[in-house]
Image 1 (tube, rainbow, N blue to C red):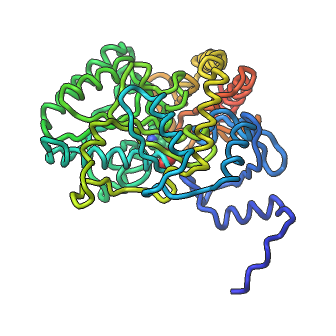
Image 2 (image 1 turned 90 degrees about the horizontal axis):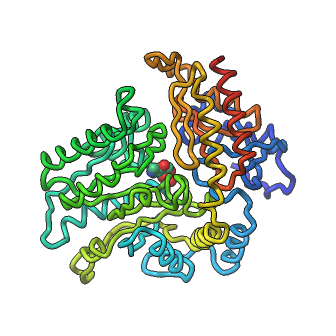
Length: 459
Ligand SMILES: *Cc1c(COP(=O)(O)O)cnc(C)c1O
């Protein structure tokens, strides 16, 4: 092989980059045989710009993680200032000032009792950490209950793509092919209203689901280490909004049976549902709180698993006792990411973001509600800064579109021509922009989504 030429200083043109992209980059969750490159070069606020200078609103918050917008002056400065000190040092047996401060800050803003913070680098790792800690906890707590080796999870849950998180996941189109490689969680159906017979009242859906959980707890007495769930909204499953009271009821049941509760707030944490953490809405404090996506406001990969003193204490002992949590990720607790995460939390406070974003949330709910009468819209679901528009072939029934038609993806691609980037979940068009969007930008997002849907579905 010839020695590589020195990196050219001049920019590579878009056509060349697109060709290299098609040839060499294997994109996540993407059918590469059908992939059409779109090269995003820069961002400003809620907007992204491609290499040709075209502007798009970031309607999926760059995969649900951007919070304050792109190229934010304060976040950029926080990264630069940390970069002038050190970019990375290990968290394995060493520490650094900024990661310590972030841990302290997270315990202050999290629900009561979550005093301990384990850092990793992605949502899936935050869940893996919680699952493994819960499992090991029952072997080491006094009195030990080593029979507690199973997890209860919710149908259509999504907790990541690693083998461990697939074991508790329930989105068939993502995980089913790998089923034989992983363990089998006990699953209860999602309590989401959109999964119940039409007209089911929310409190009935909630009570039925909780009764099923209680029955599973009795049937598997002494076997369940933990329940793992996305609180309030199951995101990747299709924006499945839980009926009020389900989370609260789950906390009461898990307390009653002394089962640990792992809350996956990877997507819902950091303001997405309108409160800083979704579990605040039902005044619930879990045994594990898993955070990632919005933790660094969408800047850098970082995740955190918060837990209690009770769990932590079960791991204490001399090195020789082998009670240590033997788990870690090379970049866990990365100082650059920690500096940005700390600054993001400061912006939340300084800009009163949870209050100031309310007009945009109201606008989003209003605008998508207006699509409810569209002949090919089967359901509209909203919560905080999230809107989901489910496309159907026929509203009576309702009859879904044939999956091979990929109507959701087609509608999102059509919306792109109106200057908006959206990513669907199957035939559900999802609008999940950065929290900093203005009501005018919400209008633009909803106009483009509606136009895309009409172009692809008619009506
Ligand atoms: C995205 C997501 C994950 C996985 O996070 P990664 O950073 O992609 O590993 C886990 N749980 C939920 C609820 C998510 O939305």
